[in-house]
Image (tube, rainbow, N blue to C red; front, side, top):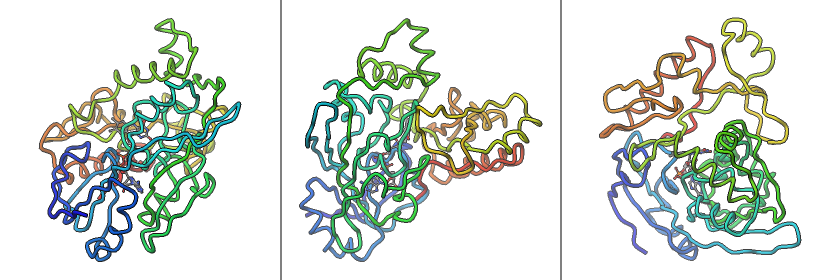
Length: 347
Ligand SMILES: Cc1cc2nc3c(=O)[nH]c(=O)nc-3n(C[C@H](O)[C@H](O)[C@H](O)COP(=O)(O)OP(=O)(O)OC[C@H]3O[C@@H](n4cnc5c(N)ncnc54)[C@H](O)[C@@H]3O)c2cc1C
């Protein structure tokens, strides 16, 4: 077992910011966890489990041990006429698993195509896109307790999923390492293509959905046209969560800002309710209205096509990115009285 010292994390976070870990270990086999848990570097230091670093911002060096999850493996546990149960180890790339599912004709994951990151991180913030969240296909999670090294299986319900939330981001934060996830997918058609942006794309391109791969292909195209590629321009996707309000608050806001867009999530999507209510106000609109879209401040800025995305134009520090996010939060609050929450995990 090789635990490295003073390890450069620049290439292990999609913002591409420079940060060092006091200790670093790449976990390639589940059996190595035992030795890791017994090591003094693990026992005596703060721990951070890292996937692809696509939802994290290092604002300083990490004075503890970073464990890079490289556990790989996908297997079919069981299947019947209607469902298939797939177990994927946590270090698998999420999009590779989506491709595996659509190539086999299964339904359920296709709307979540091209989201960067690892399988083990997907439940942490209940990843979501185009009307689907991971909770819709997740059967259970296998996780190791950081305290005693015991393995536990969490049911979907025990994960306490919400809008970009789960128990692993709240009461169990930092307490478990997610080693594998079991997904339950449909073998028969279970289309979920009513999300407006997807519908518009299908109409514009005169496309008809016949397979889950058709949905996946469409979503890949939409995402490529809208989101900056982190390998070209450092970013972590949406930096902020959308804002959810109740009807009363919405009425108040519409009186002052009649042009404000809002969405009541259609019931078919079963997308989680946000903290403030069930009506979604796109955070991108609020940020744009405050004049941030396309704005560059030093080495950082707000993307010109997607106001939710903060980008590193090169050489930015985590502190610079954090400062920009704070300025955005305070200007949105001054104008709309709405408090933006960060989706990205700050270290
Ligand atoms: C271009 C782009 C587009 C994106 N689009 C979306 C989107 O549409 N929808 C969406 O929901 N997200 C999106 N994201 C965010 C991100 O891809 C997801 O949150 C993803 O699940 C993060 O995976 P990761 O492996 O990179 O996690 P990391 O960034 O490495 O970790 C994120 C958090 O999870 C914890 N963690 C990671 N692995 C484990 C584990 N095995 N056990 C316990 N804790 C763990 C980490 O400690 C950290 O706190 C996007 C990001 C980018 C860069």
